[in-house]
Amino acid sequence: MILVVGGAGYIGSHVVKQLVETKPVVVLDNLSTGHRYAVDKRAVFVHGDLGDRATLVRMFEKYPIDAVMHFAANSLVGESVVEPMKYYKNNVAATLTLLETMMEYGVKRFIFSSTAAVYGIPNVDLITEDCPTNPINPYGRSKLMIEHMLSDFASAYDLRYVVLRYFNAAGAHESGDIGEDHHPETHLIPLILQHLLGLRDKISVFGTDYDTPDGTCIRDYIHVTDLAEAHILALHALLSDEKKTATYNLGNGLGYSVKEVIDMCERVTGKKATIEYTARRPGDPERLVASSENIARELGWQATRSLEDIIASAWRWHASKRG
Ligand SMILES: O=c1ccn([C@@H]2O[C@H](COP(=O)(O)OP(=O)(O)O[C@H]3O[C@H](CO)[C@H](O)[C@H](O)[C@H]3O)[C@@H](O)[C@H]2O)c(=O)[nH]1
Image 1 (tube, rainbow, N blue to C red):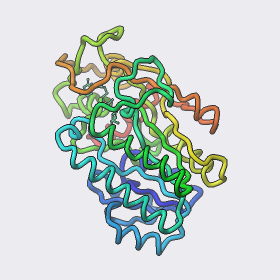
Image 2 (image 1 turned 90 degrees about the vertical axis):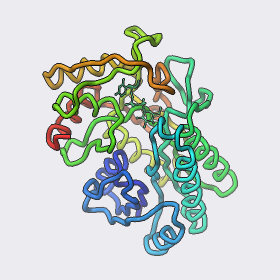
Image 3 (image 1 turned 180 degrees about the vertical axis):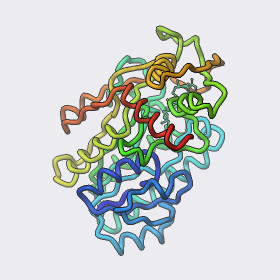
Image 4 (image 1 turned 60 degrees about the horizontal axis):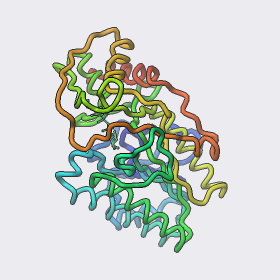
């Protein structure tokens, strides 16, 4: 059985939907940002905190858990600067409790959701996993601390793990049942689509004076279903002992500027956006684009969905739920 911590969240719920096709799954989620409706009915659901040892002990006693996938985290960069305590407590301390309990119960396979934020402000066009990690905010630092823990635990306790550093996850499940559903929403694509649905007055572009062709920030948008497929491959590699430890970037390898994303949203939806150009948002790196060569070579993963696919799937989702 696979324990999915944070399986009611955006990315976790998409992975659970794929995973239940082939494996028994138990989800642990405190529903602080996730949604009960998003958890596939075929999975067992436990409502609780990953930092609560008693809950974890009950779960490890009750279910024959072979591996843990860990998606649960606070993940807003701006919030992490204002409330760092929350990030070190919920991301770092709670994960330590999870790992400690796993080691006690001899569960030694772990897949961890990390982020492009561990790279800080990289000075290369395509980011490879061996680029220096210099996070510039508490969110990125909290994720990097866990990466360091995993590496130490692998040496000391034979923990086997795959770290997946996501770039900009976006898009929705093809079934139309689940998609990005954050409250409040801060991410670019859902905000544009909510605006085009008439739920917001305008879309703000944060900064027009970056050193990029059109002056707006460049990001690597990756379909959540492509991300989910990478997790399934990573799990298979861990369970079959093909991999003991690995750290991979997950992106498309293509960068799109904020303006290009708005253009594509207009094209896909056939609607015109009202754009407000504003100042830079503090902490935004100019350009973040992944090289995902390593996971392609080692696990055979390839992103197959384009920015247009991402936006079309997100549009179907937002238009159906009208928000
Ligand atoms: O209203 C908006 C919202 C965003 N942006 C811009 O759009 C780009 C993408 O912004 P998002 O907030 O959608 O995504 P981020 O790149 O900031 O965040 C991503 O990377 C972060 C780490 O860097 C976290 O992992 C986060 O959860 C993940 O979505 C950025 O250049 C941002 O400045 C706008 O111009 N206007």
